Length: 290
Image 1 (cartoon, rainbow, N blue to C red):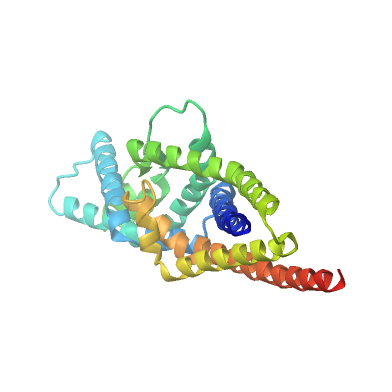
Image 2 (cartoon, rainbow, N blue to C red):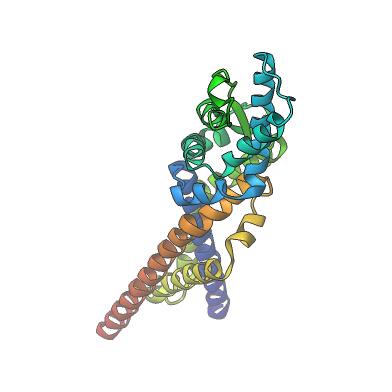
């Protein structure tokens, strides 16, 4: 009977510790989303990626050329068409234009949590709207001979689709499960550990063993995150294959999120191991005095 109780207690420690560490990981994920903070360096690195910027600049080019044509400019005039497209293509490397994109994308990341959790949100892309008028007019003014005579354009806002509608719905469903894990698994882990304590034949050593397992599991998860590359972690996330979103996720994981996760898990791991050592010393001390 004592052997059975020992086995059940050990299983309860392993299961309870796993539930607590999973709840902690879910808490770190939800806090990262709720904070909505994406480092400026990650955004700028994303906006320097041709795979991200080429479709954006192509859309702006089409909009600007159409607006000039509507204003009566002969955009097909010899020499003008090529020069016009070449200047607009340079927007991808224009520091002022990249800076103008960083702010609305950062704002969009700030509202990510709200749109992930909004009840009844109809399926729709997760998008950001940018005003490229000033940047386009600045480029048009550089056209030789005719730049100063071109009209100032007021372009409609450009919608940049960060995540397609179907993938954002997958992200909402996944995030809902993560929030459930954060709020539920903590209490489930404590309940399992309490049951393990009830059946344990050596109750005075139970806290030390439970804390040691929690610490070891936290360090194991931290080690796994240290081994995994941001690209591998990104591939596990819903919606991460969308070009701009995927690149932004990768850069943010590399520069901000994963280092913070690892630091927290390492601190929890070593903290739990230190507490386990103290609990073990106290257990032996009380055993010696009894």
